Length: 287
Image (cartoon, rainbow, N blue to C red; front, side):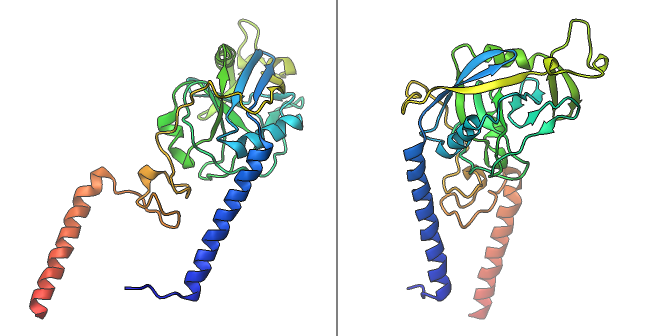
């Protein structure tokens, strides 16, 4: 039986075609402008290098390198550490007084949750409940956070990994004393032996972990060929922001419903069977 073609159908199909064309055009643009790149984080606690995955996360890497080129990260500070979880920076500076000053960010970048948030990777921070909200802030994973970060909020975009022995510096930062602590972490502070956060009435720049600058070490086209980043266990095949594991229609971006949870499956199955029996009985009586 043929489905009648209506104006609504044509409009919907036209929107889909235009959306696909825009994605394809954007992908070509990124392929021509972004290069696989090694960058170096020069911090007050030491220097380490990160290899970026811009052949597979082009929008995110281009966004990151735009901030690097504009010196946005120079003299910013690491503003958040959650022990055994993440080290986060990229968006704040110390202007002489507390609280820290938020730096002005560019427009958000599209989410590219392809790789897994495992130990040693760098990923983009986002607003809660907002999939495409990453701007300038990033974080380093201190352990395998894939079960949580790959699945929540559409997945957090991993766009590079620390190379060499660079994680010794990141872990060193993570082990500093944390001040202004909350449930979501604290600011790592460099304090003299025996001092506590309460003793630091007026902090100075020397008390913070400062990102002195981020520089490009290698901008050649292929620098990540020897890396083997782990793909996320929770892909989003149709790109609708709902992970396949939570999507009843993983191949249709226009449809998504949470999959039936295992604990509720029994009651829903019995409900469906009851409705089927009712319809069958009704047909019998109608005849």
